Image (cartoon, rainbow, N blue to C red; front, side, top):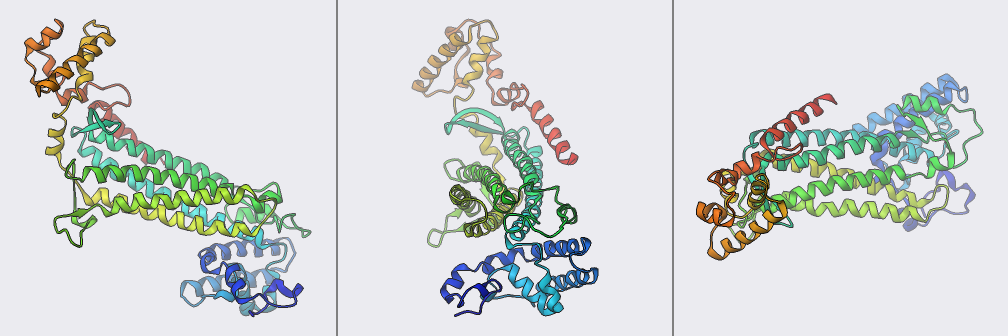
Amino acid sequence: MTEKQTWSQRFESALHPAIARFNASIGFDIELIEYDLTGSQAHAKMLAHTGIISPEEGEQLVAGLEQIRQEYRQGKFHPGIDAEDVHFAAEHRLTEIVGDVGKKLHTARSRNDQVGTDTRLYLRDQIQQIRQQLREFQRVLLDIAEKNVETLIPGYTHLQRAQPVSLAHHLLAYYQMAQRDWERLADVSRRVNISPLGCGALAGTTFPIDRHYTAKLLDFDSIYANSLDGVSDRDFAIEFLSAASLIMVHLSRLSEEVILWSTEEFRFVILKDSCATGSSIMPQKKNPDVPELVRGKTGRVFGHLQAMLVMMKGLPLAYNKDLQEDKEAIFDSVNTVKACLEATTILLQFGLEFRTQRLAAAVTEDFSNATDVADYLAARGVPFREAYNLVGKVVKTSIAAGKLLKDLQLEEWQQLHPAFAADIYEAISPRQVVAARNSYGGTGFTQVNQAILAARAQIAAK
């Protein structure tokens, strides 16, 4: 049997070793150690501030906790399974350092509000780091976009050639997705940054604590107004996992396009050696490992979100041990999102080369300019639906004849409708097709240049 824990004097014997291992969280919640120490220092200062302990005792506790921080950073503090969790580990070591005064640290506090505080401090920091990564991702997208405003690429709907677009316009769509992610995380952070410290186990405390004081020390915006809610709320974690899932959706969509673009069938991009691997038996292959891994890891984050939702749906108030499961979900999602953002940003910046000649040829190989023929007629007074049907017929006959619209003679156009003139060829050239779509948010070159300027200003403003 293992040694009795602090809480176990009510029990006749210690935990069975297998149950102790099953019950312990120290293997993963050690991730929270520095946040636990920071929260404990604020709690110790509050205890001294309110007269619950003496100022000298408060100073001893704060100094002892700081010593533990330095020991951890130097690799000298590495608690084992007997510690059960990071909170007991820190408290036990603190008592070794400062003596019995260390046992006063837990006055007016429960592990329930303690772990809630630690988790929020951790997630608050991680959200800011992810937002910084999103900004770097956006900057790289803008850098590539600026160089490719007039590079054309086939645009698709239903994965069928639809209309040519500016490559910059295509990349700016991912910029906008990342901007929503950046803003969404800021909104999530507001609900992360609420202090549960002082809620106790579930009902508050009899001691004259000052919750606003600790919240201010820890840079929380506000405190939980209900102690039951404070210790049992994990909405903030679910919101973060939802936001993280959307980031992964966006990265996965981009990854899928890169995978397609790098195939022999598309040949839109070349994968550089720094971001690709080869086959163990097929020497000619170059594999898009980075986007494939991002696409695969997306499911992990989705899974953590689903697991949290399922876990929370049946929990009565207040704290339940099930909530121990939130940390691995949060930690792994944070690490996955950060790794995928970093890898995708590097892939875009250093691992891809767009094959501009192939792209230029690709936009001339199809009927993606058919809508512009209908627009041409509509601009000359032909009702659009009539023009649409006329163009449908000419596309059908052209396919049967093995021709593209650009290959039709002027006489053939005028047989279709007398409104056609020699300027039809310019109107349906890929570059003009793209340039003409100059409505706000469209792919026209003027609009794309304005969108890049607006995006640069957006990043610079915040």
